[in-house]
Image 1: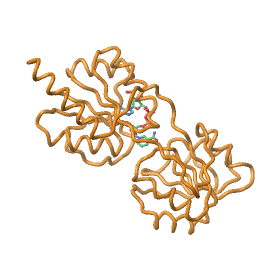
Image 2 (image 1 turned 120 degrees about the vertical axis):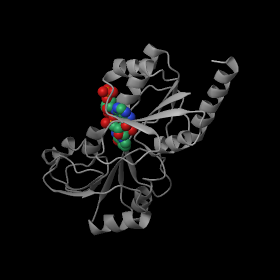
Image 3 (image 1 turned 30 degrees about the vertical axis):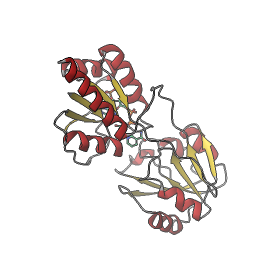
Length: 252
Ligand code: NAP
């Protein structure tokens, strides 16, 4: 059974590993090409956009893909919208994997905002020392709040023209543990953390470090992609196995 996995996440990496080790499936992993050195995958990997929903639909038809798995990041909204539109054109079944969002626990001091612009506003007018963990691509709105000092962490270096004037950049790929996160926040005298509500365990230690240090968090809510029900990696694998069995029974 031919499975195309739209990736770029821990979940996609995990699913790719499971599919690669299972000879019922012939898998292809698709990456946007957003990071310069993506993690190696045991699945055959294609890199780059498809050219919108129509391009993805054409790919699904040309390659005779049996199931499309959208395992993109909860904030990769465009790709998820494209996936839904593409399967409507091609008739390919779609499975969506999404990790649950984080929820605040006692001791957390979260301000929830709907988007990046809301996060900039929530920082206020008085100077703050901001730990910005929202990725390198959406920095320009923060450059319009130059009164703050920013510690920016991203996997690849951001474009210099998008940086706020008072910015310190760290390029690093997680996961980081709570002690490392706390040490970094103390070293840079961080007064507020800005995070997307990505969910998952890998990036959660920054939240527990902020809780321990009584540092407030500006938490950006997920965009609504209009995707239907979502599954975990194991549920998605079970779903693929059931589909494979049904196909085999029908003798297709
Ligand atoms: P996006 O805004 O939803 O997508 C922008 C365009 O990139 C899409 O229209 C598509 O181009 C292409 N694209 C995105 N994901 C792709 C994939 N897996 N395979 C092939 N093409 C893809 O996406 P984004 O927010 O820039 O994220 C890019 C990638 O990084 C995603 O794969 C995502 O899983 C990963 N990621 C994103 C974030 C985040 O915070 N946004 C965080 C961690 C990882 P075409 O229209 O030409 O097909």
